[in-house]
Length: 386
Image (cartoon, rainbow, N blue to C red; front, top):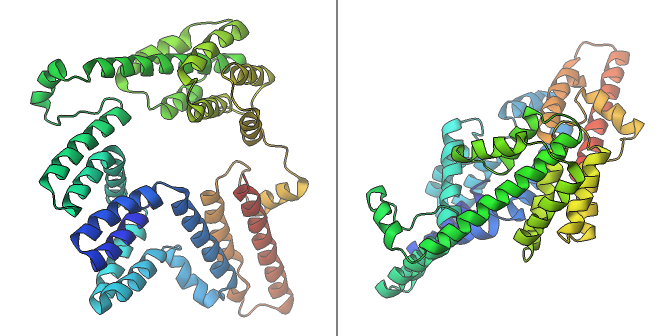
């Protein structure tokens, strides 16, 4: 997730409102841009512009552009925003910031810092909002109350969140804190949900044969299984069951846990679809279990049809199969992998490289480039609709 929203609104805020604007910009940039579909739409649009540039540029310029590997948008963002808001000094400073933050995707340290920053905002936005309100209204009372209430909100949102960050005081706090019983109830409910989903996942895995390591791995990733929970999950996966009877039992438990939460119903079934599709296509037996589960938890039929369409795609047409063949990529390749291969093929077959070639050779190279570009555009168009 990109920090584009946080940085942009924070810079605009500090320019016009000072410290208050900086804090408000960071908060609303994260909540309204970086945590929403807006950031994804921006990234998609920049990728489309990058594709057009690669198709239009002559080779003598393209080879230099290709060395940038498309990582120029951060510098453009920094240069434009810096110049508009702060003049020449802003232009220089934010040009460098754009390069470091956005145009160095392979730098592991930058990726780690961005990830930890987003993680911090996700886990503490309640307390952050309380702090900002106190500073904006210049009221110590609002600041203290806002931070305390924010901590409680964050605590309720996140399983295992601590109101007191100091480990030495944590044990004592657990003895006296009035939310202790609530925490135990939430912890027990989460454990029951994990057990239920693990049992349904195991049923789906068994339905097409023996439970595979890949299916267990997918489950662990989807549900962020903690080390202390691994033995419980392993035990559930190793216990043999009778598919349809047990599926109804565990689906009934899932219905109780998701009864008043339609979003949780949809995400639960989506994760079950992902586990069913972990090895290859979803089998008839697996689909029957998924249908039965969706029916018992009262999932909207339109939602189920949408998920089934996503995870059981129709066979591709001969035309699309030819496009994959032209680019030399597998049909399950993601867009990043496809674009990487496309860029390599452009460099390899660009007709402008054939300076001393005959007209026929240049004509053949131009035809090849056209075929490559059309194949790429067709695949991108199809995958973008999914």
